[in-house]
Image 1 (cartoon, one colour):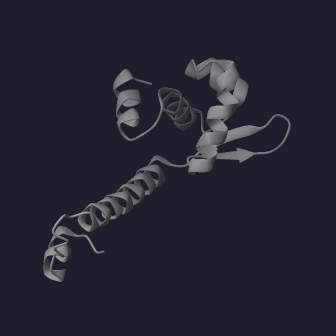
Image 2 (cartoon, one colour):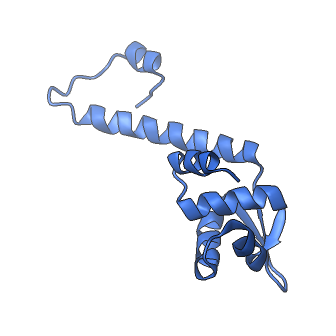
Length: 119
């Protein structure tokens, strides 16, 4: 796991601990919380909370059992999910900002389509 990889994941919205855990799980495929904190360097008290948050985002899967095991979605799925979420957010921001326009000018449908935005 490189510093550059962690930094790039952070640019995509991961916290430092999320980035370390995701990279660790890509390498390990499936692991217990203990294995994750020993390998990732994320402090033990934070591992479960970070993993639960990552599950809510759809980045991690939890397999109940004794012990509980964790796995991550494939990198291809992660990038696709982030891309889809980002494009949706961009469109919502565009429409929201456009609605705030002081003149209230509407873009023609051709201009909106040209920008790849639909409000």
